[in-house]
Length: 297
Image (cartoon, rainbow, N blue to C red; front, top):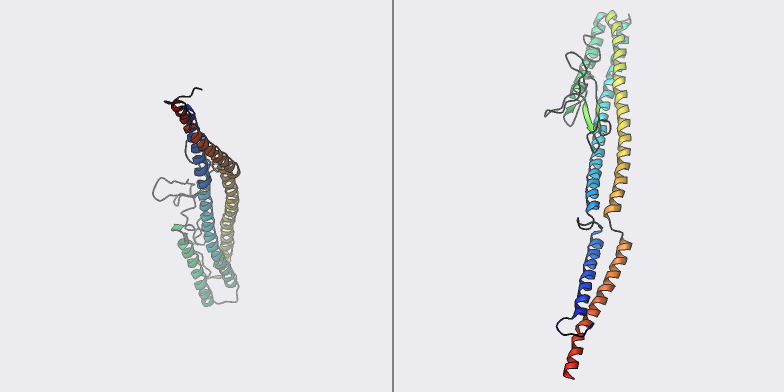
């Protein structure tokens, strides 16, 4: 290489190398300070796209867990009310057995029947009053049956107020086989349980009421069993969603997060190269003086 004055090519080369090393040093500093290997699209365009999709899925899975937990709370609220209804039915059957015996007068049976009717009214009141976040669960609105024809109806969420069974959505998509299912809760009023016009004011009526009460208890138990099975299913769903979110978060971390040990090694490397480039630039800038010495000599 010739010794020239107009163009200091060695200094230009050193400056170019310094710019490159300093840029890499800045990138390593950003990654180490943020903890992210992919901070912008320029770092890894494909990785950024995959990461954002994974982040959306992870957030959706976490919300799905919250949705499932809310559904469990709703089921527990309904089951708690049915437990109280259970106590009322047991007391009504006890009263019916009492009224069915022949050792009571008609006036005494009327007194017994007054408590019996109060229990029936309380069952209907509980069924109509039990709600979770404004959603009534035991009055037949979630039964999935037409109140007039008793024909099966499907969930309909087109309106502001959904109708039919309640939809529990927990997945990241909208696939009926993977992302949601429905919970139907039958009507639990006294009338729906088969206790309409039921009384124990006579011995014969009390005997007939026993059969109706037995059927009512069985119907109530079926509702509780269905709710219990659905609660177990939701708990299993939560476990699966939690594991899925954890694994997806790990995959997203491998794409997005910086390996501190590797990046620190690169940082030190670029730091040394930058210092070396600065030293060489200083030396290269002094080379034209050699030409001046020749001219002056």
